[in-house]
Each structure stands twice: as structure tokens, then as C-alpha cells.
Image (tube, rainbow, N blue to C red):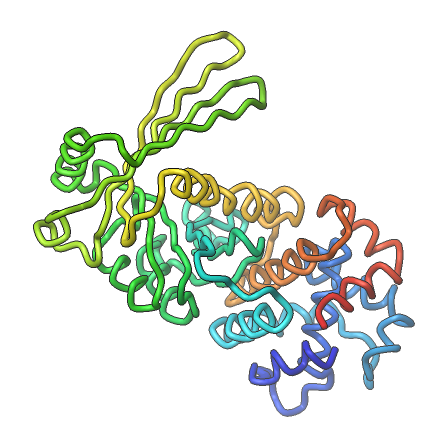
Length: 363
């Protein structure tokens, strides 16, 4: 509890001076509730009441346990920028440091249940930042009007990414995003598609003209298919100056051939811009690691933690509880026992000693 309180001490209480329940205690209970499977503020209040004896061992609970209205009001009013800063301090406090060369993936995600009345087609859109090697969410920013680019720039502005390799899809293959990454002391591997037709054409010409001295092939068998990937990396030459793309140093491509159960072959090629040349072997790993943000973060948030089912819609509630889910996921992912996230959540709800061991892992 002490480490948690230190990390969120700078988060100001948005309630009036007559508020009874301590803000840090409310946030701490909400985190424990989500570790045990809570998906709403009502669940949090029910958890607090059911686990009152356990909570009393680590919290003062001067006025008893908070009601669901208290949880709802706090998350609706809490400043998400300040809360996200606390999330980053908490992650840095208990998590593993990002080593030089660590892959950090950035991608957008809609919280489908979080929409204003009459605006179901435009739910809350977030930009998430995932440290692939550490298997941790390390940042979040809103994408107002589904404008992911601004969300990415906002996320990059507050993260310490020195020495990391930042990956993103073709939407973020832009000069301003590349410049922001370089200014944070990181390198980039950005997917390049037809949204930059002239740059893509020149990149393909350069890839076709160069010898395949930096080439590597890997084969993977699984899910009923055989997939062979071939990577090639060449120097960018004058393309950085010609297209005004900051720090562009190398061009790469990954060609994948998939043979499914029907023995039909499908081939696809992806092109990437790199701020620093890497070996073809390393490129294959980086490209694979980028997709961890989908299957180790977004998929788990939706399927296991119920993010798309969440009904929090008012004010800052959806954004703040999305941050709380990422803290929950980080604790569950980094617990040493080799079990699925789903099993850990169930064990935390059934076994107080296991729940406390999740908290002990924060030290």
C-alpha cells in the first residue's frame, strides 16, 4: 500500500472538502476489485463489502467501505492526465526497466461501450503503449475524434523511451511522429503503405535494386498453417532528404508466404522505414513483437477484463477505468506463477493469500 500511495500521492482529489473516504484508499480498493474480476463500480462496492476484513488489515477505512456512487463519482471527476501520470510512476516503480533495444509498440483501440448518448458509432478512442519485452502497458492517451496521430504525439511527449525501438502501423508513418520518437532518444520501425505513394515507390525501387546481402528467412508452423517470412534490409541513401523524413536510415521489407490447411499459398509483402539499420534477423523479431500489442494487450483487455463490455460512459470515467485495467493487467502479467490471466483473476477472488501475493509483487 505504501508504494501505491507514493505513486498516486500527486493525484488531486476532485471531490469537495466534505468528502469522507480517502482518495488513495478508493483507488486501491478499485484496483484490488479489478484484480478479482470486477468490471463496474457496483462490482467494486460489492467487493469492498465482501472483503472488508481483508481490506481492514491494510487500510484505515475510517468511514467503512465506499458505495458504488462514490466509486463512480471519483472516476468520473478524476483528472485523467494526472491519473495516467500516476500510472506511469507506478509502472516504473515495480516494473522492469526498459533495456536498450526494447521494442515499444503503439496502437489505437476503441472502447466500444464508452460512448455518449446517441454517439454509438464514435466511442472513446485511446492510444495504448506496450513494452513488448517487459510485457507491460506503459502509457495511454486519448485520441479525440478518433485522431490517433495526436494521441500518439501526446503519449510520446511524456514517455522515457531512450534506447528503445518504437513500432507503429502505417497510419503513424509520418514525419512528425518520427521526429517525436527521435527526440525521445528512441529509434523507429514504421510500416509504410500507400498513404505515402511516392516514398513507397522509391523504397520499393531501392529494395529491388540492392543485393540481398542483408536477408534472412524464418519458418513457423502452427494454427494449421506453415508461414515462411523473408526479411531484407538496405540503406535508405538519399531518401531521407528527398522526402523530408527525419532520421530515415534504412528501408526494409518482410515477405510472408502462408500455406494453409487447404495447401493454398498466400503471399504478402510489407515495407518499413527504420531510423537505424538492424540485421534482417532482428527485423523479423521486431515486426513480430509489434503484434504483441494486439494479442497480449488489446485481446486480453477485451476478452478477459471485459473492456468492450464496460458501461462506464460519463465524463472521465471510461478513460480512468481504462488506466486502472492496465495497472491490473501489469500486476497479473508480471506475477511469477505461470498461469493464464483468467486463472489468476479467479484465484485472486477465491484465495486471499494469492491476492496478497499479487500486491507483494509490487514491492
